[in-house]
Length: 82
Ligand code: FES
Image (cartoon, rainbow, N blue to C red; front, side, top):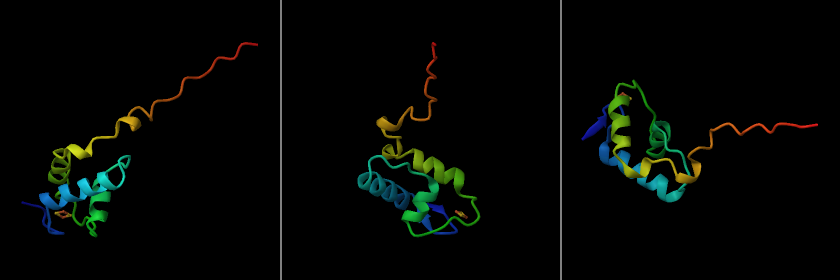
């Protein structure tokens, strides 16, 4: 199925790119821009983005690696006692 008609990207292309990126680097963050880049293309009109994202979300390899979950939490401040 064609997902991006501007760049002729199919759902299979998206899944293949995600699988390749995850196999190449298990800790990588996979974004739509990186999928385009991996396919050697650039988004044009952006009209495909809702379908592009839902196609990405259907791939089990898209999940954030467990070791990276929670990295954005602020560290606890240490209280100084003097
Ligand atoms: S349809 Fe994908 S960028 Fe236009």
